[in-house]
Image 1: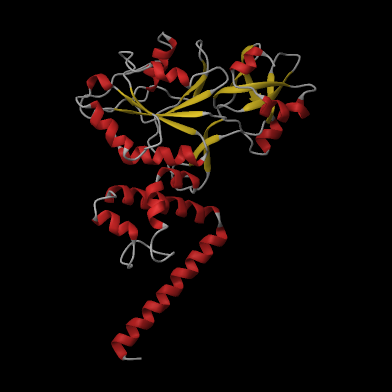
Image 2 (image 1 turned 45 degrees about the vertical axis):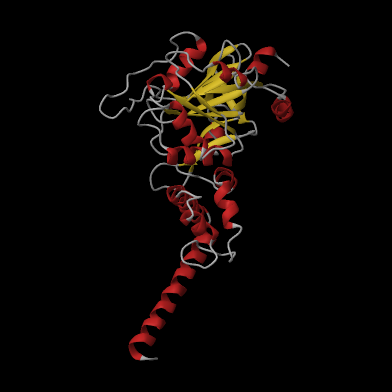
Length: 354
């Protein structure tokens, strides 16, 4: 196996899937996707490549992190002919009303979910990111940046641990180089890490600290709301000199769920366990007797805002699933139509006694 490809994350999984392209093509990994072309890491270096007409016709466009099969013509132009099967991906619902999947990055081993220890710290947002990452079976790691300006770091770590008990959590300061050493455990040769978080949390500053130089452009946060301006404008896969691959990611204002199930179960195991103990299997956790979730909230064992966050994500995921599945949407409409007829009959009985 070529040493450069191995550093980029190439392994037996991709090697096996590349066999059918071994004659006439070479493997490369997408480092950046532009409007009209892509940047691709090859064993010989980084090149510019275009997507083949067939791929465009079939709507098959690569994402940052993809391994692809390329060819080079006599003019020196590289063309992407195929995208190899993905080991993992992180995706979200397209922003806006349209129902479509937007693939953010692919072939990821670890996601650094990054937030700041200032007013940016939002537990509900962290739950959302955890759900998205875990749905795609990527290992999450939470980075609490700007520990140098936080008056009570331990209290904030305790708050985060309450919603992510089994997730590694590190308080760091990328600007001061505090708490950075443990991150080397994840930045190993052949492994890929993606940075996720809102703008201004210090993602680009972290990369500069890891590289030991000003590789990524950074901006100051706004004084009025402690929020940052967008500095990273496009996803970029970076081969770190000290080992490992890291993908810088623009701050995202929206991170709507595209899929749910495993992600929510693993992010809210406490709620899932309580729900399984309810008296009725179809308990809506509202007024039903024997509801263990309502009991836990009343007893102070479960935060009501955490349960509301869980419900919100469940509703969001179900809404997307209905749009993706026309049969499910039809069944949902029939259910509510039936409930509407039942409500009309009850009103007639009350008003007219019939």
